[in-house]
Image (cartoon, rainbow, N blue to C red; front, side, top):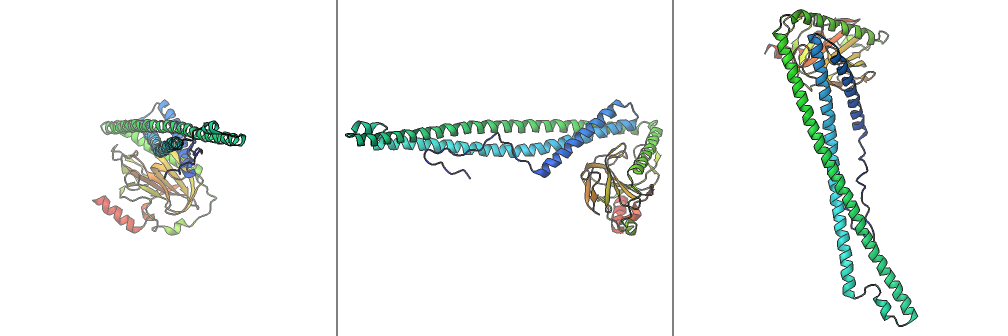
Length: 387
């Protein structure tokens, strides 16, 4: 609703268009985390671009580029949402300022007409005064009328200044919104180019027989890198939380069929037998990923070959690994509950499919995750796989 009309001679209080909007603390924290991820990915991308590499290095570099562009696009979407709210607020302020100017103009016009109708312009009483007392009274009346007129004029001038400021702020916010929307479209175009480039790279790999040995070496090295990382982040002093008692009862971390089982498998793109120490659960990008069991997040970052990855220590030297993520929702050091959402699945990984990569390790040795998961979910997964 509009503000109430000002009384005679009173300037209405108008909002200052230059005052910044107060941001929601949670949204501000989210934007800060996004910015930190963007800076980290940029640094990693610069390092990856400087490294002369294998095909796996090139794929990893392109994956970093996609992750960076996706984060930048998300940041722009959030900024566009905030800019849209700012535009609406600026338009409301401008509309209210226009109403106040119109009211001030009407008030001054009505006052002038009333003075004309009653024949009491300032100074007229002075001409008719017949005694000193009447003269003094007429003088005070003339001064009061002049002051009233001055206040009404000042009110009108003030409201016009507020209106000009509100209109300028509205234009600034609208220009910023258009600029952000254009930047988002540019980022979407760059992301599309990156996805197409990665697709061409993968297609080229399929047709190059000499890449098979290199792919095998790369996959073996990926597994070694992961094992080394888990050896560093795992804490053997953390007591068991009883995860071993829930074997066969754990909920599935993501909804989808098992695309690749545990063990040595033939890589679907490189057509080479490679070690596969976990499960590949096929699901669309953005699918919610949940913690298998309660524990402490000991790693939440990018790892070559696994992309965005989270590792949870469940105590008793049990670790669970979640790879090929799109958006990590928890940071290292965070305690998580069983089935708590910790991430969303990401784009295509090194195995040539979209989905979640899941590992369970005990005393550093990989275990087949399938026997640890609930039988009902396992039947659904097998059924979907056969289809």
